[in-house]
Length: 252
Image (cartoon, rainbow, N blue to C red):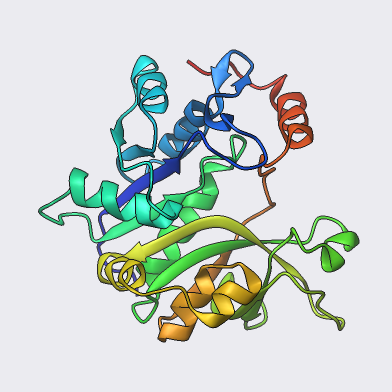
């Protein structure tokens, strides 16, 4: 069953990234990275798209390219807190019942990934939070702790299923390995509950904030996306995505 929903897409970004400071404004083919993420989100055509910025420079860059951005407290502890603060500012009347948190470091993300997350929330009324996964791109991902793996209850042929756990650890066995992608769709009440709760033991152990939601009893479902986009965390990642997008259509 599909229910009517009104998504609001918010991309959190701040300049003080630990491994690649200033990365939201990193140049990719003449366009700041955050603007490329914004354009990909807009192309999904799922709802209005805003950037929740921790720094005025990011707001200025987004506005210079005709996008929408709001300045949030730079001291907020996480991107999810930044998304919540922005949603409260942008939509105080709470007309948007879904808030999509799209990471600002995936400039080549397929717009279909946003659509997958929205579809999960539309078709699974019991789901509090939706996310996306992709099949493993390389067998080495199974033993790489920077790749977050999702354990899903997935029926044969199904395109989405309930998430049972997320981990950085190696997963064994013959089943598929699902690479978790950095996007979440929250029902508004679930976002409120999540941000109000303190970090949980499993969250701190795995360094994965979605485990806080699971320990709280919130249900997470994951939809399958075609492939995992490059997440830009290091200078090498930035060069890889520049090479990938070198032949792409120009972005205004």
